[in-house]
Length: 411
Image (cartoon, rainbow, N blue to C red; front, side, top):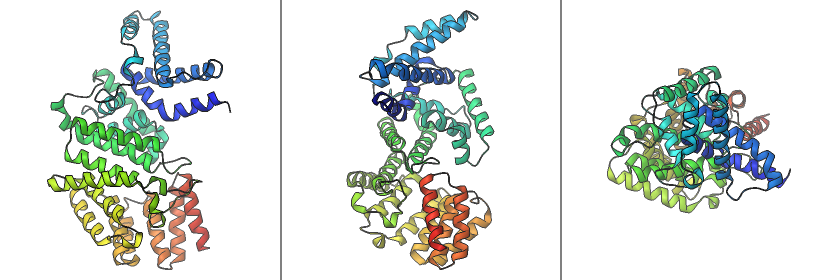
């Protein structure tokens, strides 16, 4: 593979969603922007190997995509004269090379997050559209994450785009007076972006640092806009979880469980920042689910070894979290903590009750957790059964290898 081709793949992997966000701002149309992004990368494949990689690849792609879109609109204008005005308006807009590197409240991806989270859109549509346009997940990946049919997700995304176009929803960060009412949705999607980077829903790699890093960057921007306690709590949570990234996989990408991680690889600066933030929010007395999850992550971060973990405190924090934000996944996490505090039999009973309720039947981590507790209790047949079920449900190659390894150990 040539250096130019390698650079194109790197830029696509690291920059394509930011390029898309800027193109959506410039063109005012999701579908046209996606076509322009596609055309810009085709041009890069054709030109960069012979002309060299430009000094600012992102600016080059934005500029090329913009001009490709203008050309396309003008060709269509031959059959629809009203489109000529659209082409003229886009052509007269400021040079994207000047504005697209500007950070702060004018950040294009933050604008895109707020657009996708507009209150005129249904919550499910907000999430699906954000994961598609901001994160870049495919429709099939989103469908797997939400245990839904791809056709249903596709319809949800199309309806959301149509709503934005027909209602002329502005592509902008809202006025400061509107921010509090939009904050919950924005924090939720930023955390979804982070989660996809922390634990990818599919693919070869367990993590995607481009997504988790971008979510943290957006989290910092949100705090500049609106330093509400839960926004700070979310940033603390992301920093504390991200601090373990280097220790979570082997050099070949295999999963390393929390108890087996080399804690000297944990990022101490991120831990210190995260703990400082979460302590500040807890001290204010105004906190919610993100801060409570951050507090749990802080307890893990403060333990010198897995054996030193204060599981009693973690169970207590999960009890508070369950009252603040009850969900089957929180109950599952609490059950695992109970197993660590009181023994695997206690945790297994809780997980079996949860699975019997049906909500977690398609959630592979529930079966994986059950398998681990059965293994620790010497229930090999039950452990193998649950590992096989988890293996059927997971889409990540590194987790598949981990589960296959556990099954091999049981045979």
